[in-house]
Length: 104
Image (cartoon, rainbow, N blue to C red; front, side):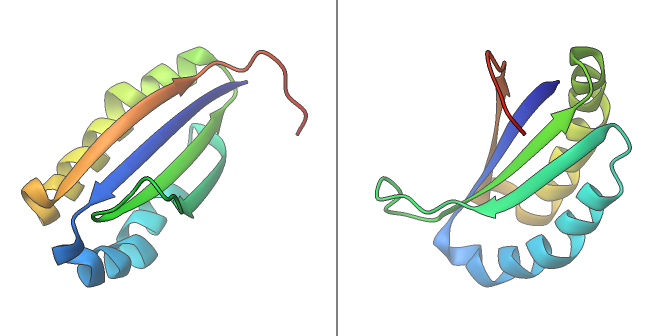
């Protein structure tokens, strides 16, 4: 199992547009991912976020190779599409999660 966390940080000025994009376009892109076995698309609730909004996409892959393929191909495509739509109003952060122990 190999895990990847992608966080989309958006400014408050695009909140309405982002919510629409999230529910339609981004969700559809994630549903069509072949390499990801499972995913969780979440709004992040945190006292540490005072401006804007964070959305997280947690992806679970069969192995590190599939995760790396996703990063090199699919994440590049998703990033380009999101940035084309929202420009400087969004930042995308990827975090490699390397499980030590798990129970799913």
